Length: 233
Image (cartoon, one colour):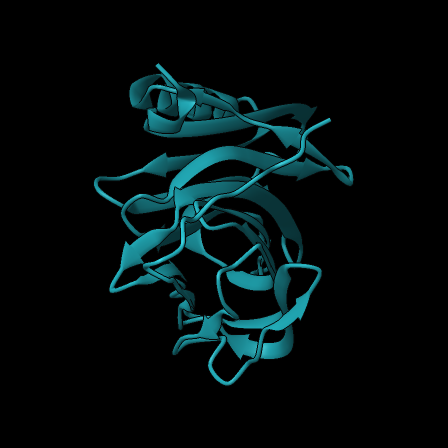
């Protein structure tokens, strides 16, 4: 079975913490920074999301964040930052990953767990997030472009409740049949530029509420075949 279809991602690292105070579980935290990179072609889109979560409380917490993806969007890897470096997680069955996560939390070792809770619903737990401090995670989403009404479309739902201090979005589309259109959402009003058969748009904002989708579409032509070439190595 390919890892794309397994229901849970788990990452854990091995650094012992010495503070033994009572823990606060499942605490909402601020999405302090968010960097999103989208690379697409006429068939597949790959999205890399880096998030920094900030704990504004005066004691350490277990951070909790729920979010949704659209049908067909699959999380293919997951990383937790430790000492400035990202450590890759492993994919496990739900019961096995939850058991390991709970065991690690009890031993004061840094874990994070990202799990699917039913169709297209996900939850993220990170422990610990120290008082007035933040932790970073990164994950990748892979999907097919959605074809409808002679258009290829991409939509990433976002629904975060806190103000994000720093947000950046970088979209690159290889060999589109036409200049992409920005749909309603965070890209509304933005224009794609074309350079060497690649369309791109870059967006940077401060103190923004990420509660609107990232969405764009590409018009297709019925009298032309669609193809895509990727170079590797």
